[in-house]
Length: 456
Image (spheres, rainbow, N blue to C red):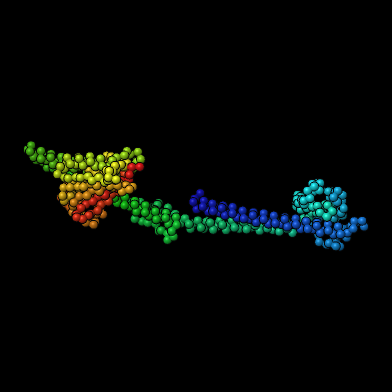
């Protein structure tokens, strides 16, 4: 069963239930009112006939039906009447052919004195009441012929209204659902034909601010993210192939040159040293790509241990000082109530170490003076690490691409590298639920700000 038919049937079922409840309520209320109204008519008729009967002296000739009808000509349909004294002896019956026995309810009425009403199997409504003047019993019944006809007519009318309303509801629900899920059909059609070749296409969005418009907007946003991801992968693969092709081409060229010549030991060592440099470059590139891939596929895990950012920074700074003794790195601790902070975070220590090492090496490579300052501060919900070093300003378009893989700034262009360092840092920071931003502050200072959620 498709979604359109399911929604239409569900909506029709709900309306059918509501219609059925409404029709049943109307019928029950009408039947209750009709029955109560006719019981009142029966009671009033019995009271009036009893008053007429009681107005004649009982010592004279017997009171006949004709005598009663001369005074009171109004009667109920199929009316029967039985009057008895307080001892249950028959005083009068209407009509004369009436052979109704004294009802079994009479002894109870003699005690309670309350009227009793009931309906028999043929639909006749009966009222038995005890008259207060002489304690006589009046048993009267009638058949509500016109009320029953109205009830039957109402049944047919309500049945027709129910069936007609149900039919109209089914038709309107199909039309409504067909129009309501139109954006879903467009979405399904777009999903069927969407490939990596047409990710720029979008489905039309509704002007109304409803759930369907939200679905269309989210789907278009998803397509945009996929397009950017595919563009990034294509660009990444192209740049990676280019970076790997260059040292491989150099190595091949040097190898062919060495094979075509008779080289002395000194020349052979020179070529081998050159090949070693290219191989080391390839190894560095491969390792960087592996780390980048690992960071891309890593997500923050609650089982990660607590890591102190300041202690990890001190380890990284100590290692970098040995490799770059001329480069000055200082760490500035924030203070809370005069005491050093303890910046604990959930972290993969190995990945964070790689990120910090890349930031230090990036600062050493592009700094105009051999110094880097790292500041650790408490930002309420996060820990902030600010890496600042002097350097030349970047162009606006360079700032937008600074975290893209294989991007290298123009200052200075003679430095070796693959442009993967900051890209790795960004992905490692985001894998830890953090954020990284870049800013250039005067006087000519680069600033990278890292924010990590606090240890909970």
